[in-house]
Image (cartoon, rainbow, N blue to C red; front, side):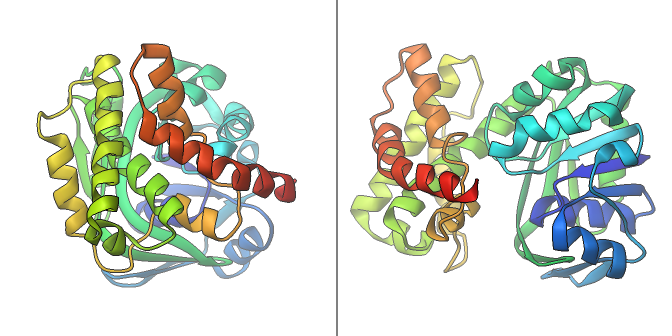
Length: 311
């Protein structure tokens, strides 16, 4: 299959690199020094599961240069989603499947509004990875996995092809999901809580979970996301909050969420797509979200300053 990776940072670089390593035709979309390094030296991945490289590496600044793809992985930051979707239009042919590996619960809808919902597959991944420098990705935590599924829960040839290709990647667990909305929201419940609380507390997750008051805040934040999900008709496990808290307890010391790292470094973050989205959806559905409202309000001034500086 021919793949385009839109956003070749930690997540896109890792999964795109594994697909290329498995023999798929992969085109990486990148900018600036990262693009130049990919074109010159290839992609280098330092992984807890074993280092590897992709050389030569197909890398372009604009997906139009790659031409229509069989599948597209969108892995840009959530605030770049609309721009990325518009750039993708020339690369989306009649049969192209588009998957978002972004944090958040509404990315597929945002991309689908631009490229057409008929192209969207639901997807969610587990991986701790980041861009370590131009042309270099570090996989620092978790056993990599990707769940994919049709948004309506049906089983189609295209979702089976995509899952099979991901399943051929070394070290990647590919899950063909019969309820991808459940999987997306189960991850969103985790990521929105740890991102907001971690960014506000300004310490790693092991320190957050060890302080009773902050642990209670994490649990309450997850409970609010669960309530919003159920109001939207998403079927989550009955014990989803307890299970997620156990997952947080198992994370290594020093772990932080990518949104938290962006906030602490003064960069634009995914605040709007995470805590902001919980607040907006809660208001639309009449579901109270006081924890996310407080986190959103506390973090928004710095977010606005970061975006102003970025532009």
